[in-house]
Image (cartoon, rainbow, N blue to C red; front, side, top):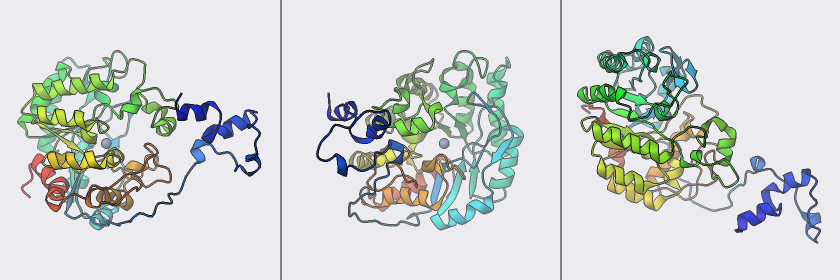
Length: 401
Ligand SMILES: [Zn+2]
């Protein structure tokens, strides 16, 4: 029995409140009178007493392309599968641009632009009205998955999206974790299902990068119990757990994704959320070494990168040409503070990349939302910052500047 098990087992510590309410008497002892009121885990918000330097990096060192944002989203989703062409618009350009200007964000890449009429409307409202401030990616039209000619239809839809102005293709974790043989019911469809081969090839032929999100933090694939390091997050969002049922394992998802990258060497893949395995940079490094058509972004994993600052710094040095700046920023996403599009979100990313500050919050929230730890800056040199903030994304998006 380790110390943590011992504490829980004896009702001491954070669970003592629950134990007390359940009628369990605290052991008698001379300290009992002075003991403070019992707390539940959710009410515990300790203030750090550490005297540490606080650097406020209000503007990025170089103009930023945020490769991973969600300005629009499908208006209809059933069992995790986005089905509508129509978009919900989370913010207007007029609401976004002042923040972008303050934070030195040249361009926001809106990954969830959808397809068809909704995509066209998004391109008109953002990309075409504010040149180079917004780029939009298209998404598969899974609503047509049951049509016998779907592989060809999907490839042609990508070609049309390119003609309309879409800059790339976004794959949500829908593929592998939600899309089923009858779209929302039946057996899960695998990431490397051959029905998508024409889609991957079309992206290669059109020089459209594929921003792909598969899997999720490894803790989402383990039981949500007291040993789970993201217990509070999973408790807040129980539907984020992929433990049990018919879900594939994290390893199976990554292997299927790797087979896709191997089979389509002329297609470029931006593997989001630090290669979908930020807790294991060794795994991400191995795959970057294996697949020259793979890059990664940093979105919503600053908490993971920042709690392993020495490994992260080495990772950024070694793969400085393969890492793109991304945040997952979503306007008005108050349920997910680690993604909330506000000035403070960018302050945190810039502080992590540009300073060697220690022990600071990775999200603008009272309680760290993705696990109870804090992060450390990695103080990258200017040459690497320039690539991560701008150069690598400009290359993958085939921009001239
Ligand atoms: Zn995202």
